[in-house]
Image (tube, rainbow, N blue to C red; front, side, top):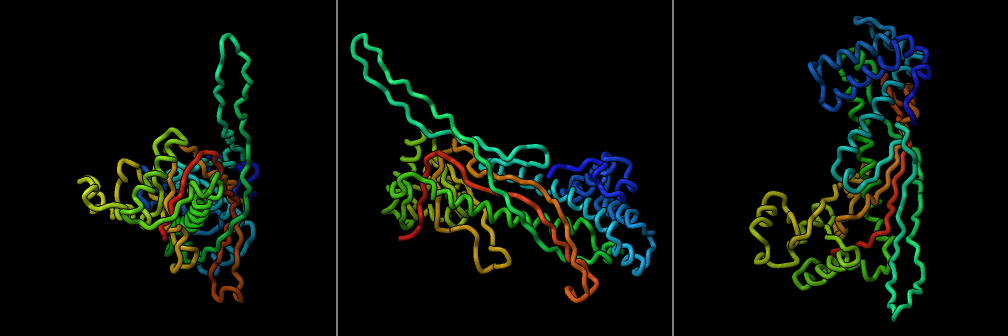
Length: 367
């Protein structure tokens, strides 16, 4: 979803703001408050500015009573105007947070259609050139054409979440509006991490000759040579150094592939400091963040028994498209919530897929 032009905002917001720049300045205060990047302004002052503006949009004074606040929030025009500001802020805080994450920067090709980027990814063809033996002055060689590659798009879907908060308490200054944005952002971050984990671990399904590139074995000294062979095969097939990817638990098993005699002093320090090796015999290690399943702390999203052996030149094989928040819904019926609170339904559109043609391997830590 692209950013709205000023004329496309609700009539109420057009009355309460001078122009699009005025709205952008206000939402920037909201964003900077969330990110902790305020300049010459405290968080408390920023929240006061946000709350004052929301009261102005709702037509409320600083000393508005509970009844006046509830009546103001009962008007559709007021709710729509407030939700527009929330949606603009969410789009920015989500994208900023994802792009700052180390994993996204290194392995995720991110497209944000809200700023005009297209849902289009170019994937190079995987081809091998044949070398011909020539005799004498004969130069008849079959002409070989490099693969032109292909352009692919990522399928997107709508995702939504419910956020529980009392607007009455917010208007009274008991709860901060910024806290609401924080809850929404954290919830979507958690869900995106779920999508990211699923995409990374499903990448092995695209491997050619599965038996060669998908190896199973316990983390023990007897299997050290097999692991080294898989690393070597990835490096030979790609011509680049490999990296080992896995969760903190999975990476912690690497030390069991050999005795402490071959662990360097630097690696011993890494074990003490991080609980796992910083590198495996010269091979770089990349940790995949772990997370709980949605609303289920008994199950993890990531496989703690799988290691990915990737070349360090691999393209950004996780393709992510964010189309933005396009709607905010509200539930506030007494029969549904049982009290005078608001249950927000924030809906946004995004998609994520794994696309690569580069050889890599997987090691499953089991017998």
